[in-house]
Image (tube, rainbow, N blue to C red; front, side, top):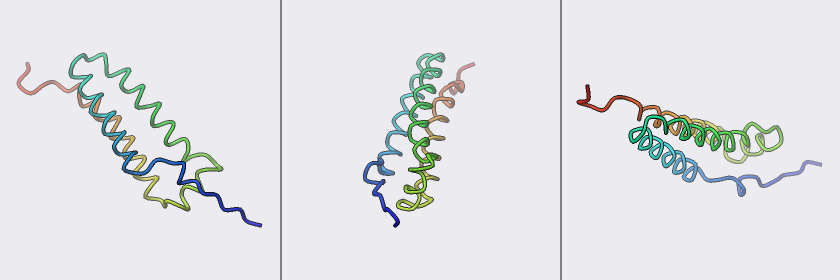
Length: 100
């Protein structure tokens, strides 16, 4: 007997994943521009959020169900959103244009 579980009704939509990643990234970017040391807690928060989201996808019980219902694109876009959220605060460390 094969049991089918609904797992995607408990997972955030891709719009929510991208929105949260963009919000975390932009806030981290602004924080790094304001004070350079604020990039550390910003990246910490991004790491926790990515761990929560990607941990579900790597789970041996939930992961295959999510992949079956949402497809490989959900995994790829979740990873890309996490990467964007991590890259934006680091970009905030770059020198401001015109600053010497």
